[in-house]
Length: 423
Image 1 (cartoon, helix red, strand yellow):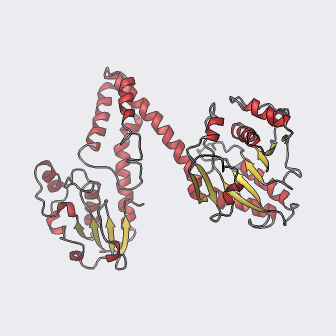
Image 2 (cartoon, helix red, strand yellow; image 1 turned 135 degrees about the vertical axis):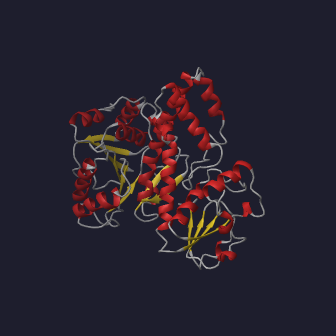
Image 3 (spheres, one colour; image 1 turned 135 degrees about the horizontal axis):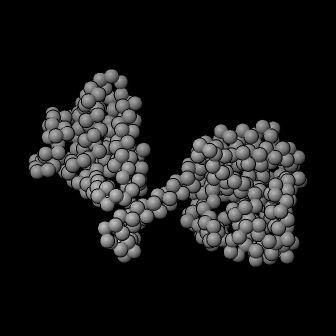
């Protein structure tokens, strides 16, 4: 295929080199004459292992050229890859100026493209925020091209997951390939450009695809900060952080795994809140600043408030609610620091008619710290509990608070249903 790559920085230069290696003809386009000139002679404008060799091989094969503007390069192209930067604005947002400029240039150039040709696939690899494709990029493209996507062009978000210094390896061995589309299937898996890549393939709505890259990097940053905070605390407590983290990483069942990474309810129980507070207390004693760990409880409390707000949005004054689940997770009768206790408290406090069904509490006699916690937080629990779902009577809202097995068909038609574990 003939592919035009716009933006010849780390992402664009890597894409150009790898596409050449795969046998495609590539035209690199960059406003910088210096970058375009280097690509033209088979040299990388950025320092990245392996790029020079791949670019030189593509040049020698006669499949590489470069330019500083679109010109007529789109007339017979199959794909246009947009790899321009989206740097930070002063307030922290993403600056889409370069993306919009390239989009306007592409749209104008599309007017001369033969409508009988297959639509040009315009693949945006630049990082964008959710809503950018629909609210910013497509309007610019449509205005410049004078027509909607579907005839002369299709627009796709194809986020990259490349790391500097290992970019070529990451290109050929990604964790997954993500395609954000205007409509399912319209970009035809980008004409097979990734068919040789052995990785899961996700075709998603624009907004989900846009959010993937931000979620990834947010988590990566969080992992670095977490490891460093634990390391700082360990050193101050005369604990060698290296073997500590080795043991931590050895747990691939919970620590390094999908567990605890599904959006849903807040955390609770007898362990997590207690131990997070212990970490903060130890840091305080040692005078160590751990901003992330010190705010984990604050974030968890904010999530409880958020969930309560989402539930109450569906209720009018004096509305009736059936809360399914009260313990902090399924298959236990432990109510200590259960976030569902907080939700029940909030609903009762706002004057809603609340009923609670929890099979884990059925015929259970609470004792010890478990009983003391409930007596302090929800002293009238016995009046709220019902034996089964039907005993709750008519309610306007049903909230599934944890992973309780229920027959959705029995109540889907009689009330609005919110499942906290499926936000």
